[in-house]
Image: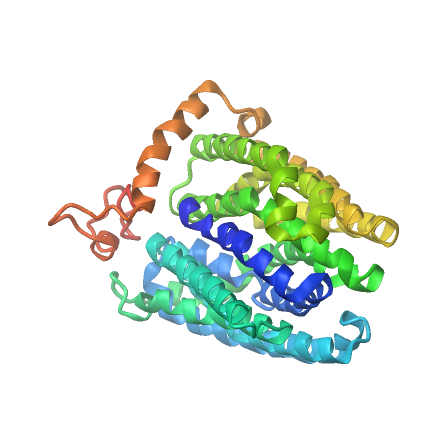
Length: 457
């Protein structure tokens, strides 16, 4: 999962220069402004239901079809309401640009089917279908890169076509979850427990939803508000900085998503803390390498006019490292049945980010947005680590300070991970992922789930 998540920033590193050089600073900013409401709606309209699907299907895979139908109807209805709201706010979000307003509405319309793909991803994570999640990332990344590169090579890349490619690719990639629509390996649920699945999903989703909205708002405020508070040129610089700093952050997010799915299936406090330390170490080293080498390649790769994005990129790389322990600890809170605590911390981060954003961006532009991200990330990470240490009754420092054993762990896992990324096939006669999902459970905790094999997890 962490390996395939690298495709997202890697593709970003390739597509961002193409977009920047084909569209220019203003055009790149317009494309980002058009896609910002799409990302916001995808977070808001799901009401935390993808995470609720992960949590409950990790324990009860037999209710997959019923749970997906219920969550899809709810998300589609709320998504349509968000589309109506975007229609009335499009003039403000576009800074009075009529053409950009049309693109904002178009991007939001595509958010509605994207909501369904997010639900499928949440269900697949609960079912421990990590290969399907990885396949979706690969298809999405390849389609985005291919579409944008081909259009640019033909001299046909415009803001409108770039937005279309970025909106359509996730929908096509959702086909990777087709196995969710086949019969469950477990017998259908019967009795009262099945009747309560909708209520349980809404209960968990409502507790985690506020945090999900706060998190996406914190991450997307820049692309929503930089244009009205500053200008599209500053947004273009900030988007390039975000693209580079997303390399370590997306890897950490992938590890968080896996830990949520695995800990929902079988909780282990020591494993959670060890993963937090190892992920922090990996992101620290990666961010340091990017920061040190940044001045030598950012202008060459993205264009001379984007060289001034280097300082804000360094700040955002620091913010990515600071966020890692909080990401992993927050996943632990949700997996251990305390999503409300996680949500509270994310709301605090949102309020901190918003206050600093409104204070700093009008004067300092992209740099102000970078400092707001760093300070709010530090706040939420501190809160999440302290809260998780109390709930799980483990020392807070066990999430933060990498040890010599963690270095050895990362080194020992790197070699087999690279072999997997090179497409190593299973030995002849060894069961594949589908067979693994239907294998005989091996522990009391797994007996009602049908766990994937260790290598798959």
